[in-house]
Every structure is written in C-alpha cells, then in structure tokens.
Image (cartoon, rainbow, N blue to C red; front, side, top):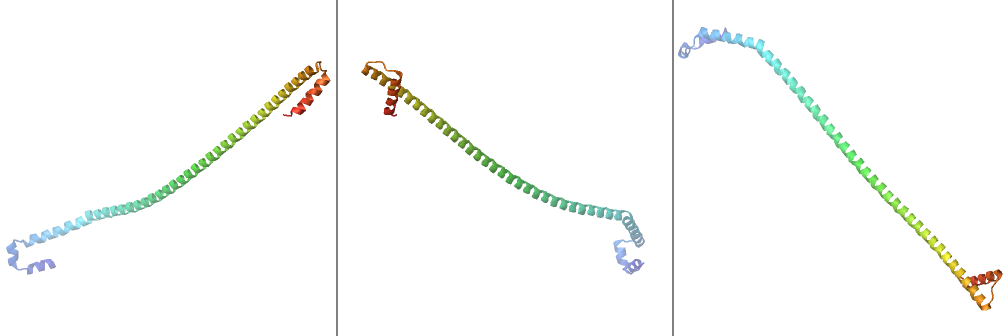
Length: 176
C-alpha cells in the first residue's frame, strides 16, 4: 500500500508520458511477487538443496582425493623403500656370490697346487726308485764283470762263496 501511495505522488505527467497504466502495473507487481514466492517455495529451495548436496559431494570428493593423494605418496615412499631394500639386498647377494666365487677359485687353485705337488712327489719317488734300480743293475753288472775278470785272471772257476765275497767287495768299493 505504501507503494501505491508513493506512486500516486509521482507527477501525473510522467506516468502519462511513459504510458504506464497504474492498475496494470500493480497487477503485474502482485503477479511477480506471487510467481517469485512460488519459485522460491517450490523450485529455488530444491535447487539450493541440490547445490548444497553437490557442494557436499564435491567437498567429500576433494577430501577423498586428498586422502588418496596422501595414500599414494605413502605408497610411493614404501615402494621407494622397498626398491632401496631390494637394491641393497641384490648388492649384498652379488657381493656374497663374488666372495664365494673367489673362495671357490682359491680352493681350486689350492687343490691344483696340492695335486701338482703330489704328482711331483710321486715323480721324485719314481725317479729315485728307478735310480736305485739302475744302480742295483749297474752294481750287479759290475760285480758280474768283476767275477768274470777274476775268474779269467785266476784261470779257474770260482765257487759260490768266492763269487759272493768278490761281488760284495766290488760293490763296497764302487759306492754309487
């Protein structure tokens, strides 16, 4: 009503000049208020509640995204730690394998050295045995030659006792 009173105060010339029909203007204002009230009551509240729900979902999604981001960072940290541990373990395994290979090679070298020493020792024994055999054969041959020479010098056949005595004396004197 205050609006109507204020409108009546407007000079009549301006209303006529613009062609404003006062009852029609009032009816349109009332219609606008009714439509605005109905839109507010039935549509705008639902739109606002839908917007609030969406804002809440967006906020929840952002919180969830932050949580997922933190979990992802934590997972990446754990993955890096696991990779570092695996790398360290691999280095340790390689070092251990190298150590075992070194010790195996050293053991093989030592075994080969022992076998070589054993072969050399057996060769020395065989050579000494062969030397003793050659010396014995030489002594026997020399003793035989001494006996033959003695029997020719004496121009008679020596008996077994004499043969033994001459052979022993010749062997002592030759002394290989």
